[in-house]
Length: 422
Figure: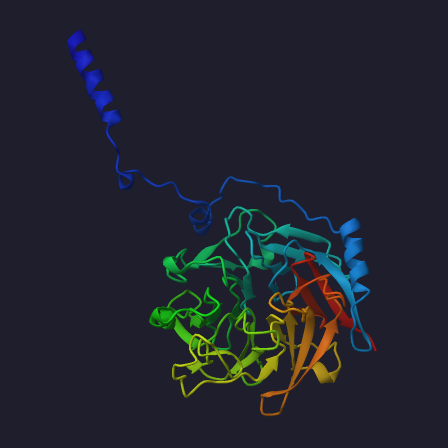
């Protein structure tokens, strides 16, 4: 009997020592999988609130006193939001959702509607985000978040954002937005929009200053260095536009449905070339010239000896070189004077690759009756001092439901509100 027990014990010990194949063990569901099945994650229930008063708020208000605007306009601090990047205003006006280039998305709530935020908190804090820069809403209230290499969707986000657990679904699974071997720390700040065709549009920057020719076919196929679109459930993906170096701002003209987008152009070519771009795509399949062109009609050194495509679409507006044109929006409000209605506001982040910095301002572009660009002018400036110091760096612009304009700033970690009074 004792011998049998010893043999059994020896056999059990041997079994425990054997390696077990990973596929033989059931994988515990992750937080995202739990949320997809409307289950609680069991994690954090208390969500920290970002302080909206104190020395930082006062310092930001002091900087805003330097901002120059057209007559009748004023700018105020709307919210303190760490690393604030692109914004999506909820269709019902309940909250503003703010992306970052780090690991958090924030919700900004003005509960008493005094046009100053009362509460700023992380959104869906039980999910691990990676560069959740791109946030956008569908008209029927679905929030989409475009990350470095994943796209998530949150139904009714405006009404279920209060808790740490929020219903979430994968539109594009992790590692499938771009090939994993092309993941980079550079140019991965996606932006998204729901188009008039009810499809999801996403900008996909390429990671290089100018990519090598051997990348060409892969990037064309994947839409890297372009804009892709897909059904809202992730199906029927296609490349909508290509030849784009790194777009971090786009919007649709509600009048003619054309897609407009900004593009950051090639560095290291000199202080005054190539120009930044504001582009118009009135149909799919257009080529906007990169990498043959570094910006505008300026050829890149890497591709100057190669034949450029004959069908290149040049920009509607050539902006100052290296001003870093980022977020943009069509102004669809009624608060501002008629001059601005239907035009484009765009944010310039400010230059790093220039001996004398330019940018850190908000631009306005009016349109001609045919829907093309007319005139571009500075609308708000003063975040860049005369000695080249940045007091702030505007990233994105968005229209609040009352017709005022929000401006995000990732240097100051803030959102401003520009309003007009006659």
